[in-house]
Amino acid sequence: LGGVATDVAVTADLEKGRITVIDVPPEAPGLLATWRELGNRIPAEGVPDLVEYLAEASEHAEMSLPDELAGEDVPPDSRPFLQLEAPPDATVIARLAVRPLSERASEPPGSGPERLIARRDGQVVHCQRDMGAELVAAGQLAALLGVEPHDSGLRWEWGFTEIDDVLDLLARAREAEVRVEWGSEQRYNVGRTITGSDLTVRAEGAKGRDWFGLDGGVKVGDSVIPLREVLRALRERRRYVRVGEGEWAAIDAQLQRRLDALAQTAATDKKGDDRLSILAAPLVAGLEEIGAHVVGTGAWLERMERMREAADLDVPIPDAFTGSLRDYQREGFEWLARLAHWASGACLADDMGL
Image (cartoon, rainbow, N blue to C red; front, side, top):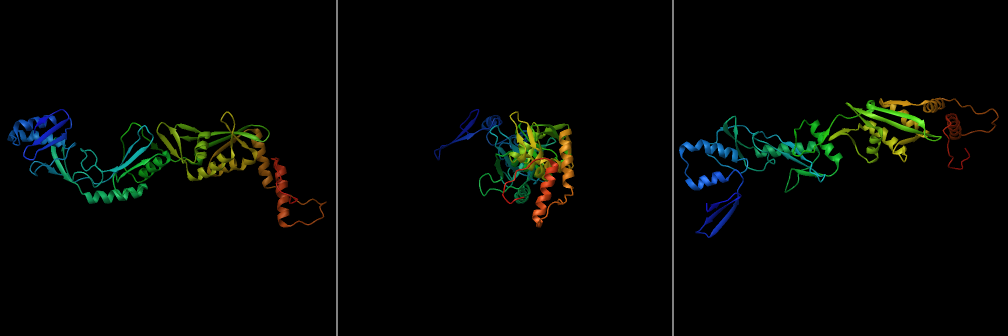
């Protein structure tokens, strides 16, 4: 060694006329200084301390020890797991990793040193990684998570810019019972899926002659997500709704279909409140079929009762009518009669004479 600094080491080969500059991790200067002083021979009494140091330093540099110094040969853990980081730029980084020795940092599947050493319960241990098993297991896990390994470069790493894609990944990881490690303070968690039985809808107070205010919420644990937030998420084509800081809930597919129709029908006033035309009342009533609790004011209940009566109304042809009706004309007459009973109003948009 030609010299030692706090962050680099310099070696000089005078015969070949070569100088090599090496990055030195913070843990290494003491070892290098001792090495420079003693050369490549270590006193026997210093070997245990050296091995202990090398076991710790192997976290930062690949080490090779003879079998008699490498300690117990322990089986490696070849199971891959999911690592996630959410940096401030909002791009979430996901990668698959393995940790063959629990005391060591993770490694990419099938990459890095094949032999690892570490200290375990005060003793030096080592393992021989099974690279083939790691690659097979990583490929199987990637398929379960719905991602594909890259052909080159960071083969087991992916970037996500859409929060729903990250939440889908977390949901699949939970279903597959895969361990997830976060490497950032910002992290996300997918709770249980919300269904119709978690929903309460209130149709209250006339907003004009034929409009009603729409309110309510979805109960998730001790939290209630306002209905307007759920509808906003669906209008933005999102499959999850935010519950709290880093906490999200998936929207059940059946509930999503029902509420999506409601989201596209409801209008938003200047205050940001949702309102609903009485003509969309069947959409609200249909939510009861999936377990939702629907509550309404007197005016809403009156319109709903008239709608139910209209659906079962028997409409005879007036006695004074002397013509004959085709089937579709009869159906059109009955439909208009029921609509009149419901008193919701209509606009005839053709000239077929109904």
